[in-house]
Length: 254
Image (cartoon, rainbow, N blue to C red):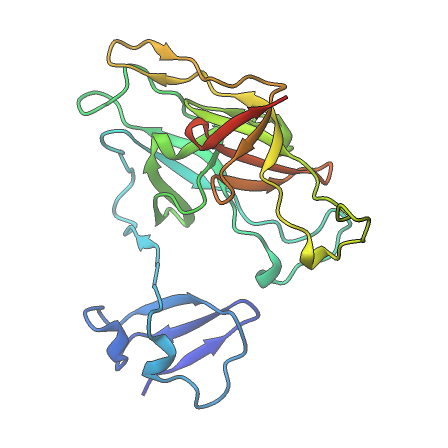
């Protein structure tokens, strides 16, 4: 019989005897919880179409991880447990970290770039769904491609992000409060803006000879970008920011 353990943010389910998990060895699989699980509601149908993403656990006998190719190893930053006002957050309200510290970089044969864009010890921000999570030495790590690193962050404020390669960092324009006819809009009816001001740009991608190809936008440009592109962030100033690839910028407005 399947067993379950509920917490405020997740549920832990034994994979044994669940047909939906056929092929998994009997182990504990952690799933995101989006609602309240009622007694007796844990059925095969409940897991139809559910994607399980569990971290790989590295046994204690292994003392180091050496990334290969164009990959880097990042120690994931822990999620914030309190608001700036000191209020404790339940795990469900804690945003998943998108940053951490680079602890290892692939070197030597198999390296695609002539020089790495990041260094060991750098604090970086990476794409939301990038890489493979690994539990190592009691901490959560991520092995990801260097190109999935959005930028380097040397402070605690996302507005100071230094984008890498072909990334563009944008301060999103505020949503319109009224219609053209002067009607006030509710939060739910405000359309998500896809216009913003470029704050910083990366140095461009490297060609085969190691030369940088500069980007076609510059800091200060007001741009129109693809609506569902990139990664969005909330700054300490309350403003919304977006990091995306230069190819997702569709036009410069003036």
